[in-house]
Image (cartoon, rainbow, N blue to C red; front, side, top):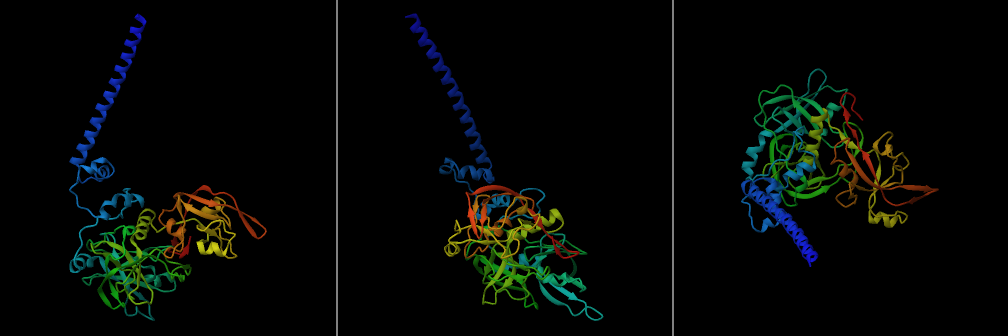
Amino acid sequence: MTNNNSFKESKFRKIRHSSKIILYFVILLCFLLCGIFAFVIVNKDNNLSKWIVDNSILKNYIKLNNKVNNDNENKLSANSFFSLNDEKDKYRFATMDKSLSSVDLVEKEIPSVVSINVTSEGNKSFSQEQIAGTGYFVDKSGLIVTNKHVISTECNPKKKVKVTAVTYDQKVYELQLLSIDPVEDMAILKVIKPDKEFSPVQFTNSNNLKLGTEVMAIGNALGELQNTVTKGIISGLNRNLNQPIQDECTGKEILPDNLIQTDAAINKGNSGGPLFDNTGLLIGMNTYGTGGENIGLAIPSNRIISGLNSFQTNGKIIRPKLGVSTQSISAVIKENNPWLPIDYGEFIYANGANPITADSAADKVGLKEGDIILEVNSTKLVKSSSISSPLKSILLGFDANTEIELTILRTTKIQTEFKYGNPEKIKVKLGGQSIDLSTLILK
């Protein structure tokens, strides 16, 4: 009987001890929840508060009085995704404000737009100036971005060239070319003798663009009509040119892609000018006309920002480089080539040439002709009507020297056939490519 009572007392003590532990845990949890609740209430405008409310049961009880649009809600994640949260990155995505009337938008943004004049040397003196295109300020000190083809005359070492900018109030500033992009149609210049602070544009995240969004272009239509304003909508996204064009600075063929299509009138002379959304934020740089009516193309803001931050860090624009020539695989290509093991990815091939650049990132990890790249950081490489080269499109979102993970199918070539094993993942540290202005050699 005594033993039975002792057993019951021991069991009761254990239960009481366990109950105390549970009670302490519940009290601690209550304190934690109360702390989180107090933080959310006191810091209603904080991004963390909004995240907590949106991802917990609090969203059923708390309505944060904070009217923001989608771009503002995604601002933190967008900057983080494009590695723009470090203090070293000067150029970031701005918070979208309310829509502006056309008149207010022009008055707000026209001070940031300049005409680019390129003057070539004649027989004895400079020839009459011709407005070659448009540019825009990206900082207060006088840094200007325009298209590479606008200032391509300066890429000819045999010609002496003077480049000037004319502001909206007709002030003229001489410019110095600082860097040209090895991939995009982009050049960076600066005012040599600034006499004031300039009005720079602000950028928005072009990944958030939607078809039908109202846009406005400001530029020098036909190279003669300075400060021409045209308005339209975003007519298409992720457009590409079906035929390669020749880079006027390097002489190499390039195939522009991921472009924004607009029906705002983009004429000769608009090249290098800004394309704004209806809040006055820059969504792209007008760059190509197609010859079709009401079809203009612009480089998206994300690629402009990445180029600017690369320039800020390195003193020149350096783009990532894997060092492979590939052809995208699609369901149609797979049907016509039944030996292919899969209907997506990029097949390493160069039509008789070596598809692997010597000593490149691809060369260092042993990629070879016939291998198929399936994924980059778990994102499948899927070709579509709007994305002709998904590999290039994804890689340009990284900085040079970034380590990425590729999912690949390695091949064993038996006579004239390719045989494939199972997919494997490999780590690759991207290289970089840039253009030396002194030699105009792509490195």
